[in-house]
Image 1 (cartoon, rainbow, N blue to C red):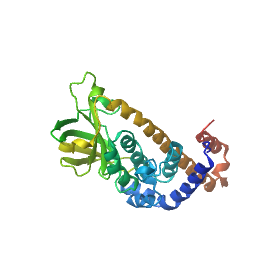
Image 2: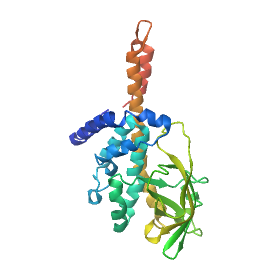
Image 3: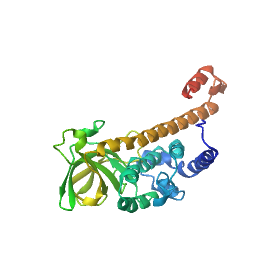
Image 4: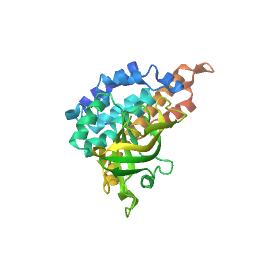
Amino acid sequence: MDYGLTEEQKMFKESLKKFCEKELAPKAAQWDEMGEFPWENVEKMKKLGLWGLAIPEAYGGIGADMVTYVTAVIEVARVCGSTAVTFYLHNGAPCKAIINFGTEEQKRKYLPPAARGEKLMALAQTEPSSGSDATALKSTAILKGDHYELNGNKIFITSGGIAEIYVVWAKTDPKASKKSMGLSCFIVEKGFPGFTFGKKENKMGLRGSPTAELIFENCLIPKENLLLGHPGAFGKMMNIFNTERLANSAFCIGSAEAAFEYALKYTQEREAFGQKVAQFQGIQWMLSDLLPKG
């Protein structure tokens, strides 16, 4: 599929496609079946700097443009969905939030190890009582001296347990005139006192990517780890999700391309009634319907 890429982007795409097929694909089915996180792929991708693809060069990343970024998501998704989800959610909202809104100290502390793939990142917003309605959060973070005290639960968190850095939403002003104006975002490290992990979901697919519950019981967060405070945090984070939406779409494109290629290959190998099933017009119609129109 031609997405109007520049020559440089086309070269990147072809190079990454070969890397993904050779290095990331071989154990993808095994990891999905066993529910094992693909740490081996994480290590291989470190060598290409992919964990820092969307992070500026000033903080150890590649600083790629958005087209290059979503092109990479497509290629990784073609071969291993679990690796792709981890990859684009790491480079997506949590990294972008720190890049766009973090203090210089926060950027220099958290972005370089993220760019090297030493510390994976995750976003923690969804709760038992709030999903799409992001303003209905019940988690609270109360300032007490030089720390915030965070209490609440997050569920369905991608990379929960394996990520080291979490961008966490919580309510900091329960008395705000609008629910959206009382929310803030924090950078929370795995290992902070009072931060533990609960249920890991048993999913139908993408089982190599853990989806887990985060539990905060009087979790102590240093005051300097406030990333975005009320009343403006909600609107700014909503803009960050545009990056996530593009990456989600790229993931779906890569997965769909892989499914089509698998189906086409099967029809060219499977025989019925003395010929390859790809020769039957009904099969050709179905394959044609799978291709995007435009």
